[in-house]
Length: 577
Image: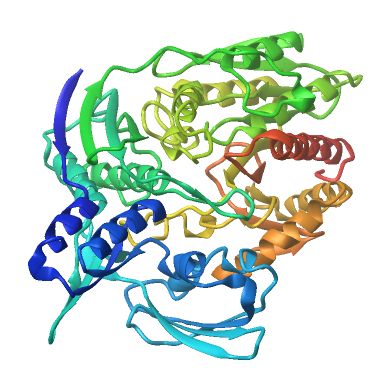
């Protein structure tokens, strides 16, 4: 292990308290926007009030939402009208997205959203109360126009400080501790000599300590978490840094930098970062096995292997970069063959259980013919469980890709590693249909220090229900349409599933605009020609499963299982001939 960079910086709150506690500031009015939790901001404001300073310390992250959480008695509201700003350097729905999930937090109070077309980063808010009176508020959302580490111009949330003292008013950007820390990370890694060949490292570990507590929201799985947001922003920003270094386009999923691991933890002290180069971990988490039908959390790796071998099919294997084994099972029969896979993105965990449950059902059928690889990315899966030991309810997209740092599906060349499991499956079956189980975040996904929206993944920023994607070869559009129709018809029979979709889709459209998908039998669907896959038809599931546990997780893997069964039935019916 070697240290690339190490730094601790003073908390912004402590800096402000020290500055404005000076007797010379007595009588001043201080308004600041910071990336600190509510309790810390209010405690600092009380300290300043005790020194004779009128202080209001607001949130720089989702300030409109925090305005309603902290400054409005929502129980007294009868109606809300919002006019959100629009900036030429941001997506048109950017400031609308930052209001999410306001309508679910104001207890059925009607909310009207209108675009103001102003670029002043200020929301115009009209509140109507039950007693008939109205209030107008201007809610500032401080942002800065800047270039990021790969030269893209972005409009990003930032700290701000307004001071009124006697007849003097100053109002300007205030670089907060977390912004400074993020920039130091990007600079330190961007300036380091990584050599010229991928992969550049085994594990690049970015250990960050933040003094910011999480705030659960009273809707779904939503939590205001700067720790999670920082993890996401560090990880995807560094992918972009290494994509640029390697000469690849931004978003290239074939990049193999090594395993990038932001590990965020809480501290009562000053925020800090330690960037280290480490060897690959080969340890897997262990624990108690779960009954598949009632599994309330992701399975441990050992159980996945045991469940697979218990099927009794022919075992075939591939190897990961760390040396972990990727297992597949081939059940040979007289039916039309189908490939089943899960865990390509290892933080999408419901498909693993759903695939195993479906395989158990199919294996009991006479003539069953399929391959199953339920956990294609064991290195990412091990990292996911490692990260979940600290923050079990975070998305942890650092575990999405392999230890090489790439998306295994996009891997080419001779050294296929994990992807070899799919090549073997197709060689064994000659299948025309591959069912590939995936998931996506069950709550909002942001990159606050890089323009707010997750670049390249903007359509995934909010959950929008369970949906399906079919990629097909040229000349297979008719079969793809039939497959989607047959599968969604069968899924629509699952009690409450379409209704659940409708709730999420309605909220998505309210806060983000059109989904961009077509609705088929109550399910958002995408269908398109794609020659990347070697199988003529690839059905991809997308369940909002990241961070789910308990009954919600059981529901998720039950739907994944049902999709596999529905696709298998469609294949056997001759619809795809």
